[in-house]
Image (cartoon, rainbow, N blue to C red; front, side, top):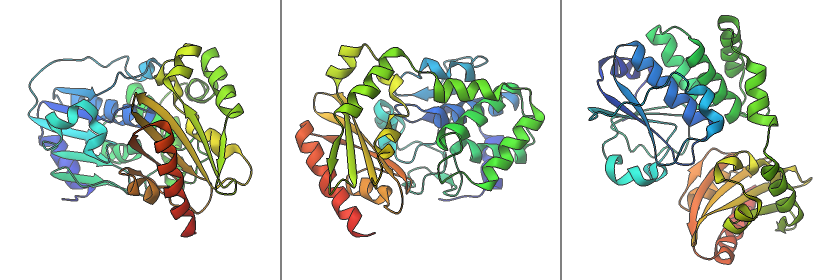
Amino acid sequence: MKIDFNEAAQILKNCEDAYILIHQSPDGDCTGSGTALYHILEYMGKRARVICSDEIPKRYAFMRTEYRDEEFEPKFIIASDVADIKLLGKYKEIYGDKVDLCIDHHISNTGYAKKTLVCPDASAACEVVYELIKILDIPLTEEITRCIYTGIATDTGCFKYENTTARCHEIVAELKRNCPVNFAKINRDMFDVKSRGRLKIERAVTDIMEYYLDDKCTMICITSDILNEMGVESAELEGMAGIPLQVEGVEVGVTIKQKDENSYKISMRSANDVNVSDICASLGGGGHIKAAGCLLHGTLDEVKKKIVAAVAEGLKTC
């Protein structure tokens, strides 16, 4: 059932002992929104815990300096920035049918939770959480500010993607007026600083980038062999999905990341009018109109063929 902000705020006021689920392969938005919700509940005197199928990357540790992980039996389950229970990874079977409240901004949200606050026009889940903070009259502490800013900044590509709205700029202005956080350092750490291995991988995949459909679709493949050869952990790969779109004339950019021997995580980006959410939905995934993803199984060649065929259909609609 879809609900509005006021009902979601009331639910947060009344809940107790909450687990906050964020999606596998955690990024800045799910980490930021989940951790901000933790601080909101803590401020209201409630126990909360952020749960993720994968380890949260070290690069987000600055958002979690005041987070204290406490084990307890949950009485309430919240999902933040999780459009589909498939994104819960190993927690899908445990909590997939037990989510009481979902807070999200994905147009492809499947409505799996008992109550869902979804705002497709929001730039990030952190923007949705910010609106709840204002309704709940929670103070913007440094911890919460770092979380909200990072989620919005990372999901908008440092305010350059088309989901960058006037409202998200207003929220950031409010954050900057009210809290002495080093926003410039967050931007540098999120968008500029890379390990040597990450730079090597970017160079390697750019050199072997593949072109399809009259060069309207580009594809990069990051296999386990490449990661092992260059000594890079998969957590360092965030932001790679933008590389295929850097080529002039490309409409759809695809990034393939190997998860295990026969499964691959697909990230898809659109430069102009192609709806990659629909393309990924046809492959069992979803997301935003210009940024979406899915998980495919099979050999790498089989996965590539499925992707190219789906993108070809997507290009026909434009």
